[in-house]
Image (cartoon, rainbow, N blue to C red; front, side, top):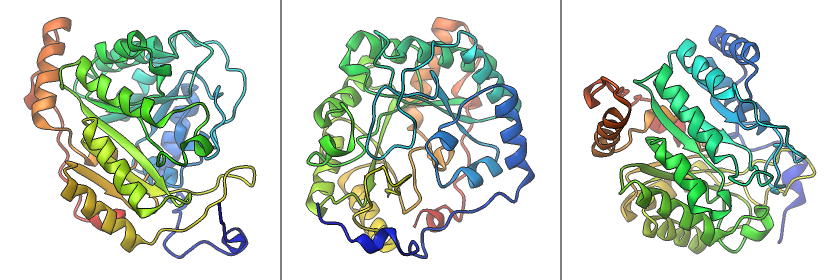
Length: 329
């Protein structure tokens, strides 16, 4: 792969700007997470938006520890033998959502190939605990592929998240280089199966990083592949190298190019698209409304099985921010 060495000697383009914390809510969120002994992907993956998101009192919780069994070439999360699962972690995550008064929570996890179920039951328990503590919340999960074990995936879907997110990360040609043990087709299959398991009653979401050497036509094909596997929400952002040991940036994609890709994706049929240099899977996640019909179906099912006195009319639908389009450009 050809790479311009100057990319890693000179300063980043002007459009790659990280906002430093200047909001008391940032320190309040950090204190809460420390108090409850929780892990966030915001810090572990060195997300460039953590100052902004934490300043708004939102965070993406990473369950099942902070050590991953995979060694993806783009990811800052450490690779090591994971610790045992903490039985009280689901309750701690639920308590965090209650204290923060979240309307939308994102729950993710490291890959746990050391566990037979890949951590699926832990996802299930966390979803159930969050819903019990905060029944009005919209629950989004960002999951690994569970090695395509249907019974493990079914555990997560039985807990009925509103949004099921599994990232494709890159185009098919670059998958072996970028993603440890993962397979392009397997990720697509997992996305399609997840939706089928609940008869379409979930919004499915996936993300792609740009700047790793992918070609224009490969990006368009990835979009088509995701649509063919029933994905309705797409995120696209710039790959940023966490350390010198990770894959190099091959190209910085301009904001205008990201805007063009967004227009293409919407024209192709995605219902929601976030596309911009600093966009990540969970960036402004609460600003994207899952399909109303999906939310109604999920809440009807959950009320029937769990006896919750909650109707779809109680679910939060945040008004889109006027500046969101500019922020994602």
